[in-house]
Length: 284
Image (cartoon, rainbow, N blue to C red; front, side, top):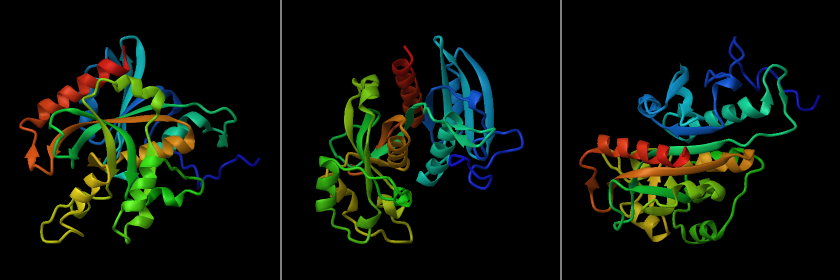
């Protein structure tokens, strides 16, 4: 059968769960909150009316439960798009592949994926401790160039490519945007903007310790190209969702304004506010 997957391609644990996430199909809901930090998972699930599933392996922690009568999951991805490569492929396998027979299903399910995180802003006008929803995203990590069928282009991407001055980085760029039909959940966010997803925390984000970054004006240049904020996961979440037929949207709480050198005075309170803000909107 053409849709049959080899054991080396779809790796499963002894109990039949997907290899990295350690999950079975029944362990996840159709709505999934994605957070980077494993410690944030119980901070989210403490608001659930009940928690039915708690599983983890490596940095991937998942809690599934019920909130206001609706089933919901929260999962940690760890840091970076290389982890998102694992998370998105294995989440899709859970709902769109028959794991026992290792066959791709003919009818595909669309998950709703809500990335919830923190970010820094490159726009000097953006105030810290506010919600910022990603409409367009550019990935600077190159991940999606490993996937044969991925291509995305819109007015934002065409303008960005045309004016992006860093020729060594340009071949790595790829683009995506939000799932517009679930953007309604976050219509009252203070900011909607364009996000850059970086492949690192230091030089890619303009930080310099012993090593110098590419250009002291890098963040300023990104802002001039229409970038509002930056983080390390959204480009892959959005791009995989488009390839696989899922719906994804990111909201980040802005905890730093790099152009003004500001950081949230209480990022723990900011995180709590973010969690409550998201849960109030995606589960009515």
